[in-house]
Length: 410
Image (cartoon, rainbow, N blue to C red; front, side, top):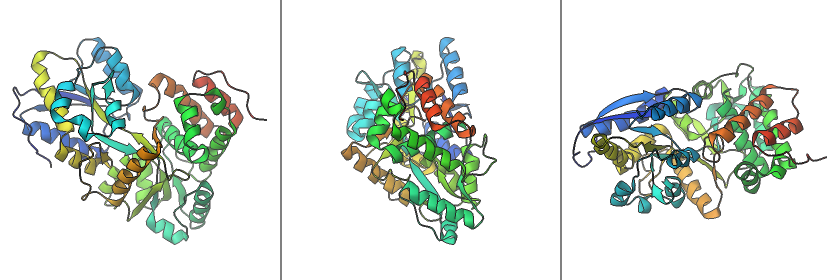
């Protein structure tokens, strides 16, 4: 357990944090933050909501802020940081960021994400890679298959795994998991430019393009390699299937490692990691971050200590070892991290140079929630409704994105 001390606080206080790190593995990561604050005289008050950061968390936070009783801080990320800042509800962090040299410690993409109009309003804890493919090494060996680099190779591996009586793909049946898998398929099928046009620009032509049609068809093809009991299954249960060898492969971000580690599995050894098919040179990212709300003066010292804590070098190492992600800070060594984490940092830096870092649509990094929610409804409907065609889904997806559908390809 980490107990790195911060400068002596001017006044101890209660720190109430809204977050949605609720799985058993994630709880170990949160424990690192609690320990750091307790070591500096503060009291942690948990405001945990186990809905993966979905609608319930948003509604409860909005209610608290509107009533004039916001929590000290909240786990907010991506586009939502800018939305809360525009409302004038956040406490600026330039004083802490300047004193702690955040601009020098963070990659430009991360620091820009934490700012509103050039000023820090959020503190990053980590970087998650979303486009990961996880493979049970023993199942792969017994199937006589290889780690797939393309979608054709993926489906060949899936067939080989099915022949030995194992479910080829563990699948979580929640809407955000549907969209996360779909975006990874889109990257591998359509490429970086297609992803940017379709999901960042919401370009009607891209949403009705042959690349989108092929993406949807490939996504639906995955379904035949999953079990029939995936409706509503959460990511923890899906990861457990992979861990125990009940399934051979899993498409999910590296937060899945929290459950692998909790099950005694070694990422990169027992559970292999590879970029999702077709995305070797791409890094789809999700950044966990904390925002501080505008609170009374007596609560601000504890707030500032929280911001310092989450950006502390030792904390970033301990938190990310438990969380499955990589540190946001560039100067944190990865000698204690697994091979998958080391590859994640290498690929992040490689993608930064190539311009292939992509904000995750499913995890609120690319579009506001009011845009994403109807899009993931369409993706979920397409997955579960066998009669819905790819072209019908394309038209609905364009409508959900608030765009007039372009003419579908003949």
